[in-house]
Length: 205
Image 1 (cartoon, rainbow, N blue to C red):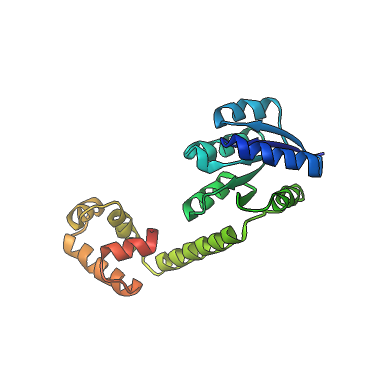
Image 2: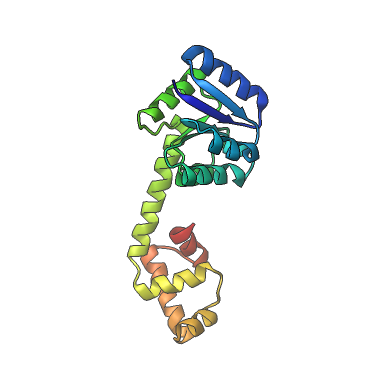
C-alpha cells in the first residue's frame, strides 16, 4: 500500500483528493496544510510520495522539496499545482521533484502519476512536457551561442551581463576600453544581434 502525504494550503482540494485516493486506490493518505508542519511531520513519519503544491508558499514549497530530499533521498515528490510558468517548472524539477502535474488534471490521472512515480517514472502534464522541452532547447541554444565565443569574449559578456560599463570591464580585465568595444562588435556579429541587451538575452536570458 502506497503512503501518500498531501501538502496543500487548500484544505478543500486536499481532502477531496485524499478521499479519492483512499477509496479508489486504497492509498494511505496524510494531509499537511503548511510547509512548516509538513517538514517535521514527514521526517517523523515518512511517506512513499509527497504531493506538494509549490505555488502556495512562494519559495517555501521548493525549499521543502530540497530539504526533504536531502534528509530522505528515497522520498519521491509529485508537484501538484496551478503554476505553469517555465521558471517554476524548472526550479521544482531541479529541486528534485519526481513529477509535475496540474490541478486541472482528473484525479484518476493524478493517481496514475503516483503509480508512475512508484515505478520510477517522471509524470508530467502535457502542457508541462512542452514547457520542459522548450526550456532545455533554449538552454542548448544558449550553450551553443556561448561556445562560438572565445574565452576572452565570454569573460567580457559575463561582466556585461552584470551591468558593468566597458571602461569598468577594461579595468577589471587589464585591457584598453577600446579593446572591449572591438570584442563587443565581434560578439554582435557572431551572435547576429544589434546591441548589448540582445547579446545578454541570447546568452543568459
